[in-house]
Image (cartoon, rainbow, N blue to C red; front, side, top):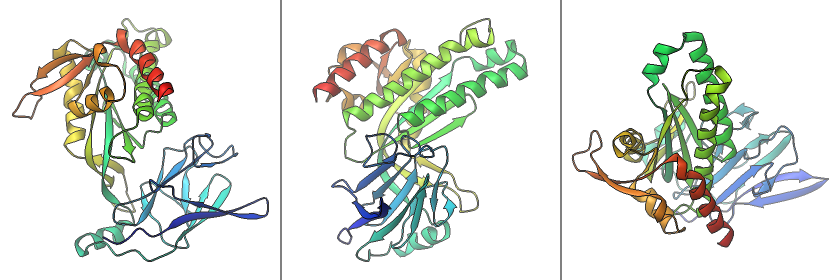
Length: 329
């Protein structure tokens, strides 16, 4: 592996050329929120619009964070993480940036080079947290509600879920049948407490959205959801080609998040955490008292797994404890 080559963005502000290097964690966040490294005062920019990150091998890739108006590289809107080359032009909202990497970076191994050249995207290992939310008894709901109304219900849920998750900096979102999957990328070897708090904030937002659907659509019963959260290492990047690209996360951590959500029915809880997600959370905040430990048999796994369950009725108190810990840290 080569030494890291210094990388930076360059743009002109009020007639002055400004340079923004990747920080010590080799990451650069861009958007309207003041939590970004580059803060844009631009109505066309989203609060968390895009991020640049340097991989362990040296190349820098740019990811659109679910922005409304897109991220453009050399005039093309990107749909997946894209490796940047020295001299590339980026456009975010009304602002244009030049990307520069001062020294050459060693090429990827021959087995990977053809894939990178054919798709122009990165597929790499990263620590992630996965949130899966599923509508309970969707089959029963579909039998009771006419198809047109059911479509409006799910469309509203997914639209509002997308907004809430994007505001909490979810790197990717997927809608699979009646389930929502969101992925957060962590730039360090353990999630920061504020990142975990944002994930739980997003979950609380989804629970609130689901809770309001009965009144909004005059349903005969409330919409109930279950959720699973799991953390671990996964392959993240593009599955497909330039013509049809889809950036996502692949690995056991994703599969287990879905299984944990299913296990909530047997655990008599609404949310189930996997071992690593719970360990990350418990190591940073006093939250152990909110969870009930269970040993569950997850579908497709030979050995039983330890999971940590909590009911929606305890979620607000859990969130309050998380935010107190964030403020104290």
